[in-house]
Image (cartoon, rainbow, N blue to C red; front, side, top):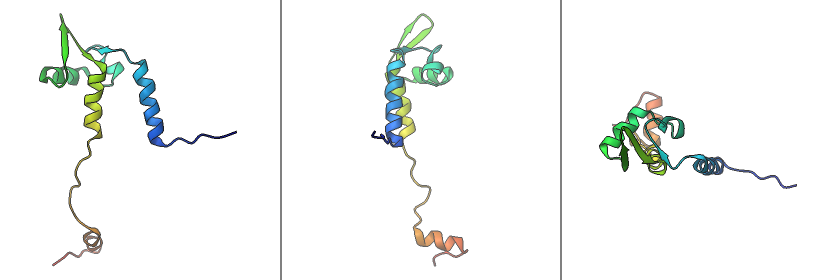
Length: 101
């Protein structure tokens, strides 16, 4: 019997695939929290700003679930630049209370 070992990335990818199949095609301000996990207020603000294409049917604002998810996945995967550009020597000097001249 062979035991399959999955990395964290494999598990995340599989979970995304399963969730993508279970999601409805469209979300509205009433369903966005349950489907995508985005507060309705943020969804409406982004819809007004034109962050993703929407269709308005009376008071309901509809968007494709894939567009909303892609927007938030793109925001979450962006890495912030390091706060400083110190190297190992600067870090070692800082630990002992010294600094470069």
